[in-house]
Image 1 (cartoon, rainbow, N blue to C red):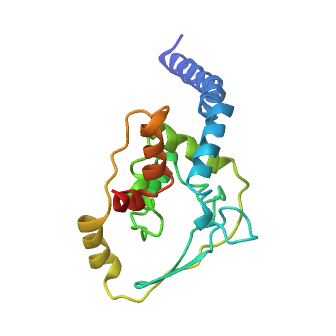
Image 2: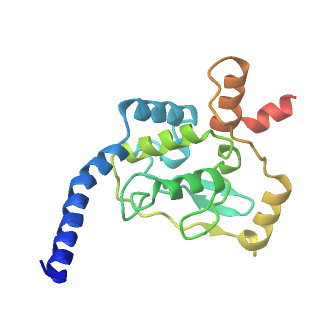
Length: 201
């Protein structure tokens, strides 16, 4: 057998192996019913991401208005629509936006989205939440641009505020299973009531 023939057989074998393994890989990445149920539970504990839903309109499709001293922002579409939602984002990009407040392009999110407390959410809960968000029906709805009234708010004032005052939660290595520790975790890092608990202390 010539060298060229051996190379052709080798390429064909690699291609066949790829075709065989791809469905198995895709299957392995499909979330289980238990993970989706857990994600739905976390979703509910956060308030059902109600900030991203206009009353009586499609769930998670965004467009809800929030006025603040810095201007006006509108919640974004977090349905799995690939063009207007988060369907084109990787799981890691969704997690980064949820916990660190950064879009895939590096743009900083205004902390109307409480990523300053969601950064204390356990890794397994965030992953389950992402799986659930991908399971809801996609909605094609373009995001409404924000209207910032304060000059240099995003480039100067917001980073300074985050550095000086934003709460910093430490995610647990595992989700507390029961008792006071679980209740505190849900209140502070999932239901984002951390500021209230700090004031209560």
